[in-house]
Image (cartoon, rainbow, N blue to C red; front, top):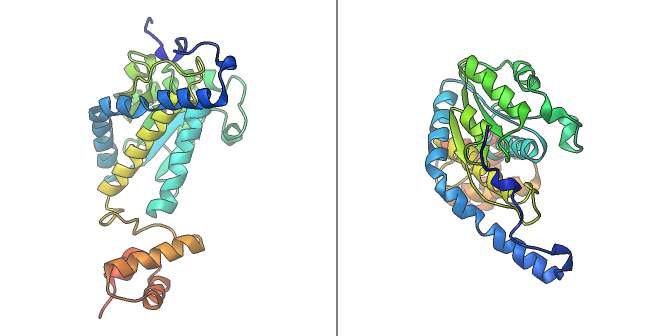
Length: 270
């Protein structure tokens, strides 16, 4: 298959080792500024993917991210933040990385080249027809991810992807591809940079928009967030004070009694 892998093309900058720190930072920042504009062009694709995720979740389905290396780690980060932020079950949004959990911290040799392991990993999570699987691969050529999406397609499971190369194998495999063309990296081929930033922005959009559509946000507040530390408890108390006419002490009592901002507000009586 022939396509232009823009993420691997030569950097727009030469002789990086001769630049001052100020120049390095300025030029990296200059490149980073192009990423949101590239994401903007993909908004229609992101919207279609979110619509399908929401539709399946309303039927009891779950969302899975699969990826290798930086892409896999970004999926895990996004998935792990959903329960504390939105108060959803830990298995509603799931991140799976090639090589297993040990690959979160250290690369596992050749894990991304295994074309069959992603499907095995998904089967261990009892993947089903109401679930959605999104493959994340900056290059768009990761065998682990492509193999997983292919098996999902064969089994009637909705597939999406986030990639940074137009016409890549993963974009042609996923039913609902999101392609964010960020171009060459500041350091040639270092797709943890602009491509990674683009993937993180898209993941933020997918999970946040989905959770809002599922009713996990009220107004602009995380009313179902987990109260797992003092900072979040204080935030929850202040949210309640913003919703109903009570002082800090009363809001704190309500939060302790009902266990969440939403329940405290819904059950408050004058």
